[in-house]
Length: 264
Image (cartoon, rainbow, N blue to C red; front, side):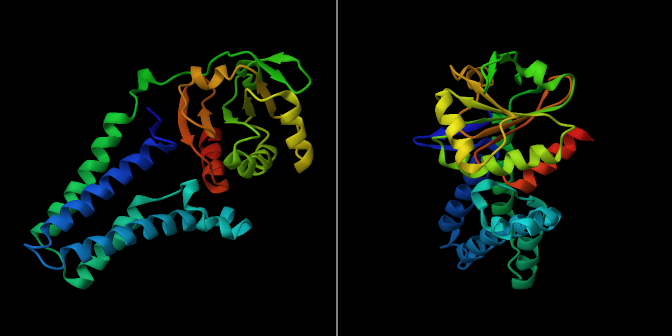
């Protein structure tokens, strides 16, 4: 499972696991407040530091990408967190406040176990991951093709999108820009079920190139790849193995990091 749907909201598995761990951590801290006054305040501050530290660490690790678009460092919804930095920030705060105790250690263990256990349960086993399908696609000129022909034995980035999807509209110009900067790794931006006119009109309005954009008129590709929601970006190795799935809007830093991983 790459994502969890909660009513109208779709969360990637890592985000859902982190949210569940956070809820468990803070809820139990609240219950312990009567026995250990101050533990709830410590827990809330630590949770904020984990979030800010993890985000700040990721930004530093990918500083060149964020220097191009500084405001995107604030776009938390795009993902991009390095947990080690966050845990380090919370640990330093705990030492500074002298807040370590068996209650604090138990809460930290609970959070980590909830996070890791949820990821383990919801992440598909290697053999259960879908491989690159040969779903028929169309170029914007109406010529038939498929992902195998587009990849031609190389790694491949597949982005499932549609012009009516607001996060897709925000990220598509950036995705095409990254695709142009990495010609050694082909991209396939596969529109999911939109009329051809809507796709070409959107690209024309933004002055975007058409070369990496394809149509999946019946939205079959998303079904075969077991995706939930748009946009979704999938990274395939040269042998067709699915390496990573990013659910939701993706940042330039994360996209470039994953492309480098495919290339290397």
